[in-house]
Image (cartoon, rainbow, N blue to C red; front, side, top):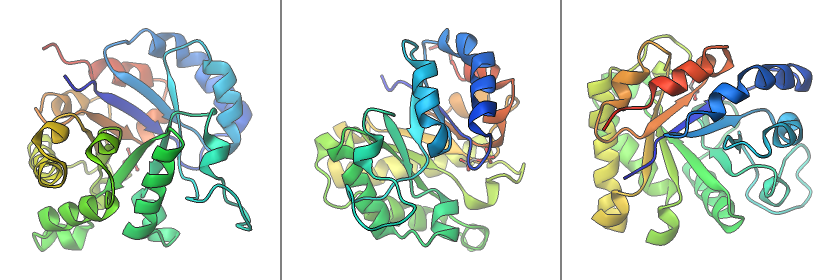
Length: 252
Ligand code: PGA
């Protein structure tokens, strides 16, 4: 019932030329996998070239970040108004943005609203750090982030949000969260969504896992009942990206 979303977050990697070469090499293979929603998130400067290259394919584009205002004196920022038409999704609240660029639950919430107003689907990231994990605070922390990030949304709008559960300690470390534990936390997220928006809406919202996902572990996540895809960093820059996406297709 929920179509899985496999999104590749390139972070600050690949020049525009490198992005063109890479996507030319994988796009036909990636486009042929219809059972999952396929998304790539290049740096802002490559969005136009990627939009040109992917026009006519079923592959979607995401921005990695944006400001929540339409325009103004915010040197270096990009607005939802500028992204509209270039991409269909935007990642908000990635832990690297929270950690290095001072994003808070409040700015994440403003970005979620701004994205929805402009017809962009937000991919809202949540996740605990190692200390919280070791102190067994994961469930309450993640539930709190979900609640704070979605403040003020109607159930109808909430259905357009994609949530990515990304434990901070699993990102870029090669130490992935095991599939059973990820399923548990994602189930906690879904229960939180049910309290906030009702069970029907909670059953519609897609929730991804992210953190050291690769070709070897993707299938294990996808077999879990509440995991609806993945947000992938490092492995989305490899030539095996289409293969990883294909491995996300689970026979029902
Ligand atoms: P990773 O990154 O797959 O390289 O761990 C995931 C992410 O940060 O979205």
